[in-house]
Length: 309
Image 1: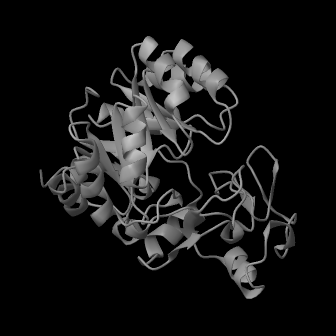
Image 2: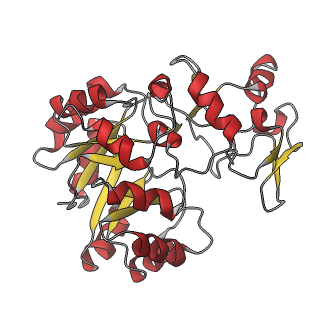
């Protein structure tokens, strides 16, 4: 259906065309996140210029995304991924453009609703995942429950998958592909700050912590998983107060390469060119982080992930 050669999907972590294209060129499915992109059409067109293979774009449905979706479709996007919210109002536009709709779910019931709304592919995301987490169920029990609930609709497994063993395991559970983010943070094409990369390499599986609302990501009640740092420790020491009472809120702790300030609790991860207190920034990671031990090309990561198939 997706016209890919390898059952691997890049989690849509950033709008970096080079990373998505590198994954697609390796025979897997590259993805870009488009929710926060200033010029959605430009991201889609640039990615298309870098690969002749399919790639996807993701939207978080915490606000109306009809206009951004239209911009992406007009630019040629044909694989559209949604997360959170109800995808039903967006499916027809994608189908009218000849596209495929994927939706990330955290339960079998949510999967059934997604399929009833016309979704073509279901992504079952377990609680182990890094970044935004929409489930309270672990990947191992979630995936077969979702597979059984929506068969014969294909299911992609996400959350806690970090190596070829994990890929083989979720395929054995009935998934048709594996969705990975943390492992691809170590791709050479991923322009994260070297301090972030070093933290990932040194992290144990217990280091990524689940937080109900530590970082500001643009909408309330947004559980997420990230490496524990000084910002998290100060918040926990204060008793995990609500948003407007978090210690140090509003403090400028770093700057983007553009010079734009990053304030404490902002959801911006440290990328190349970021300066300041890097350790205090949001460093997203899943519980499979201990399997991401060295930097590789995206193509080598895909090859390694599929080496047991």
